[in-house]
Image (cartoon, rainbow, N blue to C red; front, side):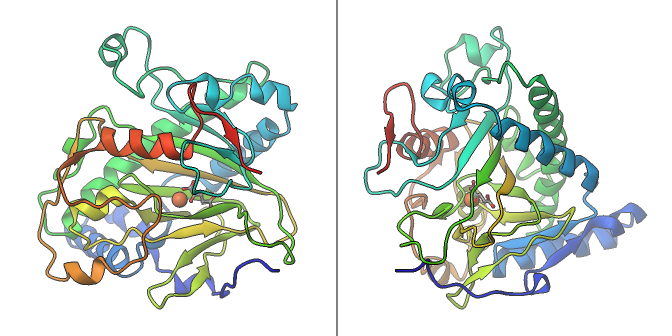
Length: 343
Ligand SMILES: O=C(O)CCC(=O)C(=O)O
Ligand SMILES: [Fe+2]
């Protein structure tokens, strides 16, 4: 019995996009960066971004408050658990399952928020699924302040990237931003205890999956544990690079680009003997956005060869973001209706 095989790589084997050059304001430089992002999104579906404008000290401060949250007594975390919310917001305990019995429980605990909407927001008044307020821990008010600030700034950075993703495909710059008017953005903080090499590998920190939204910005601490399925078919590490975001393409961007951008499978195995913390921000469009190809990929068959996971979306008919999310969230996460802990 052993954990699954993997291949250790150096940080530079995953493309690094440095945004500091955008300060010049030169349109040619902007187009060049957009095309490099497009290239990385096409070949790997994963890349690091550095000098993105979010100071490393702010990311460190987020990890600090995240550690304090996970160190709270279990009863306090359970008082705001996902199973009390019909909007998939709150605390997710270890190995907690949704409705899909074929999945294995993950060896992480998490806390997650979506866009915070007041009770008098039109979408909330209309009873629109997944729209509303977040749950917050009573004894750690700093968490709410820090996460909402970070959420706002990451939403702004997402707009910058939406435009670059469009320009990189030679599409009009607002081709994606128009789907992000009241978007279903999500921010999670996650905690992964270390795993022994002799474990069976039945349960992993995060089981193999693809992300469902448009794209993800991941901040990871210095421990490591993220692994991605390389184009050559190896599970390779994505080592921590302080102050960077690891960015990856999700299912919705894959559909928009007709598979031109790769929604690359990834997983987390904390093989490193220390507690690991990470913080993904999922840039996800409006609930009613129809997700359908905006261009035609000449290499569509190749894109279809990637292995499929519970999170894969067929993309063979027009489907809304809300349909994708409600179907997926119901299978992977507990709700007021379904609560189950894996053995
Ligand atoms: O914790 C990580 O590094 C990645 C988490 C992840 O892939 C996810 O939540 O979708
Ligand atoms: Fe992911």
